[in-house]
Length: 153
Image (tube, rainbow, N blue to C red; front, side):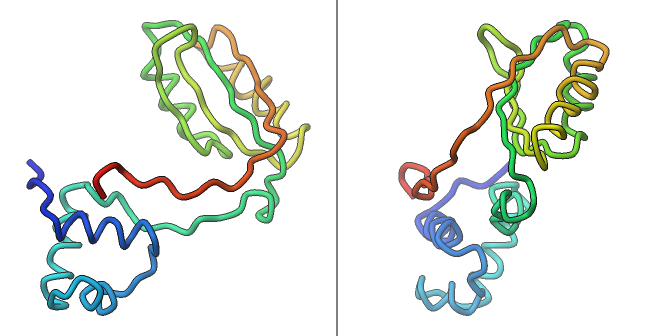
C-alpha cells in the first residue's frame, strides 16, 4: 500500500513535472532537504508506483510519424481483455483507454503517413478477432498546450 503523500512528496512531483531531468542534487537544493532524503523519497515514490517512470517527450512529427488519428473501437464484450492486449502491442499506439459510452476503446495512434495508418486500421485492428467496428478521427493539428499539473501539486 502506498504511503500518503506529504508536502515534500508533492513538491518533488511538481519539480519533476517541470523538469524530468532534474538531478537529485538540484532537487534537494530547491526543496531544502538533504540529497539522501531526496533520493529516498524519489525511490519510495517510484516503488509505490506514484512515479511510473522517466521518459523523453518526443515530437512525433520530427521522429517521422507525421500522421495521427484517434480511433474508437467497438468490440465483442467477452473478448475485451484479448483485444486490449493485442492493441497495446501494436506499433504506433500512443494512448489506449477502455471507456464507457457509445464505444469501448479510444486510442491515439501515430503513423508515418496515411498509407501506414490505413494499413494499421484496416489490416491490423479491423482484422482482430473480437473487433466489431472502428471509427477514425484524423488529427489535423496538435497545438502545444501548457503542461498539465495535478490539482494541489
